[in-house]
Length: 330
Length: 172
Image (cartoon, rainbow over all chains, first blue to last red; front, side, top):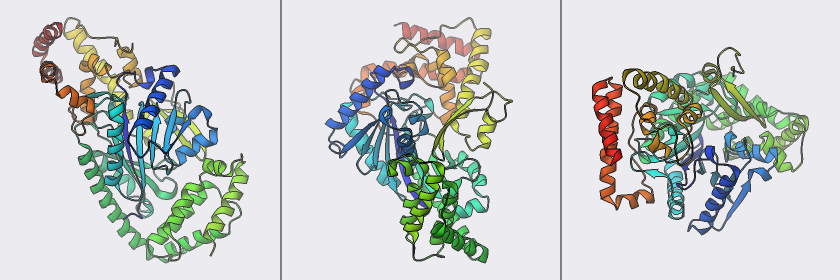
């Protein structure tokens, strides 16, 4: 189960009653919000209180900003503007708080594998502790008040990142996507664009936040995820029997082990094939966690940040091939 | 602004994303956005926001009834109703009260619902400790909800009646 679900994420949108929403705040106002929120975290009795980093977007290089998006810690919207924006991160990066993105606070819990309840539990506790020190904008009828009315109510987006190579191959994802909308959920590619995202990785999340409790939204997402995972697993079983599929998996591993140059797109596709091979029982001596770590580490900006120097596209492709080859060597 | 993909339709969807280590920003029409996998509730929202305002409130209140005193500006943050329809963003927490009549039909359509259910902030618990104040507020809310319903059902006479009642209450 956890092999199809790669990541679980809970995000809560909160705003301080005292300040206008970020779209009507100037930089001074935004800086005050950052100060207030960071102060509240320090004074909170939460696990985040003693052990966190605050990164101000204005102090970060372009690569550092983008790598935050690649690591699923910040949104593209967040790094599109640096004025009065900061992100608070726990040392293990499981907890993060974007300050002054679309809302004053976007609190996120990111967990490996499939653990919606566990992630919500952590988010809920952190939110309650912050609420003691910050006066959140809340209305009895509309719930948490958010800058965009699409987040009203619980302000919660729960999502799972799914690896669906077999459903993508059988072109079932777009058919499923239409039905999901009726169930209040939405699915889209994690990397790349269009109907066939890079590496067959998809994000499934709840759409409706008003009139449905956190628990009900999570149960709904959990049920649908479980069904999707089962569909994916039976499709995987079916296609794994074909010699063409087996050939593709083994060739993919061969290229990853011996290439001298490899782009991010190509590496993602091949890693996805290998990941599928492990899941379907075609490859036995590779740990799936190794593949998952590679998928995050080889993202372009993350590579630059880890190397701590600027790299051209070709230098990146050489470095990426070297790195993958080393990790996957027999 | 025209859509950056097809160059024909007007762009109404603003997309920010990271692809292959680079940050990109696009203005697309809803059709191209959908093709690229960006169809979501948000895009439909800004769209329907404008639709609602023009077709429902615009024609109904301006033509069918004498001009209704509707809030045009939020005193707390300075946001005008125009700012909200243009951006799809509320200016502050008080905007939800000031522009309640205008935005509730859209909220209902987006969420299929207008009443929160779930976690209650500490502030709400404090409010709940003052039941008297809450009662008056909820009665007014009830009237406003009825007004919205009447508008949706195109019961214009009933809507005018309710509007006067709301004015009376708000004036108290």
